Picture 1 (cartoon, helix red, strand yellow):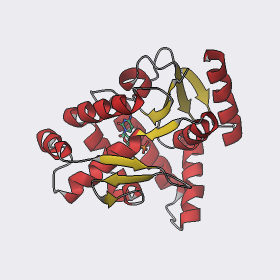
Picture 2 (cartoon, helix red, strand yellow; picture 1 turned 180 degrees about the vertical axis):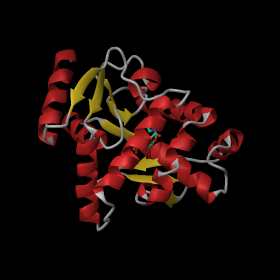
Picture 3 (cartoon, helix red, strand yellow; picture 1 turned 90 degrees about the vertical axis):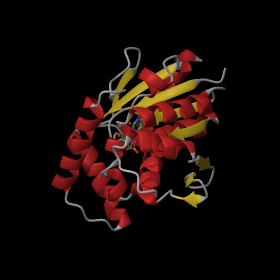
Picture 4 (tube, helix red, strand yellow; picture 1 turned 30 degrees about the vertical axis):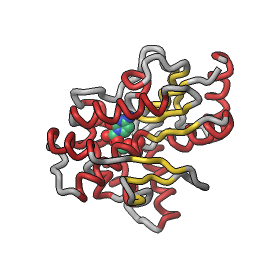
Length: 221
Ligand code: C5P
């Protein structure tokens, strides 16, 4: 059986790293829904549509294709013909994506696209509302969490490798702010689905988290 696997949780809990590895092990497709909200934020900036202009964003999305192209070490993200894989990770996008993702029209449009991608199963999808809203019937639902401090430390280490030197306390504050916005928005806020399994990754290695999730999947298969 080709399953739908939903992995939700707050920013920097390790969702994408773990989701990619689980997808690889199972030979499933990986879908990063955060990248779709980020790509929409990029398109809004490029087309001079205000980040909170619900109607403007709706019209813009009607003309916007968001595509994932398989590649190693990571899949590429395209908005129409432009590759945006790296651009969507920049602060200008990261600091505004919560505003864009809180708009009704944006959520409706991207939720529909995500359901189409997941339709046939064989998918690992990560985000904030996959288990609660996008795929309420997913066979496996994981809610991945880690302490704010641990998440900031992980982001700090990633940044050092990329030559970015944001102080740890600033990262902690940014993570807290994004958590708050994502958990308090009106539509599809970040919450654990009733039937999701909580996995706290604070003191676990990536391999340990993947093993835990594989165990949960094996019980369903
Ligand atoms: O996962 P990532 O940090 O890339 O997500 C960026 C932002 O996209 C989140 O902070 C959230 O505002 C939004 N998002 C969402 N619903 C999802 C995935 C991401 O609202 N399913």
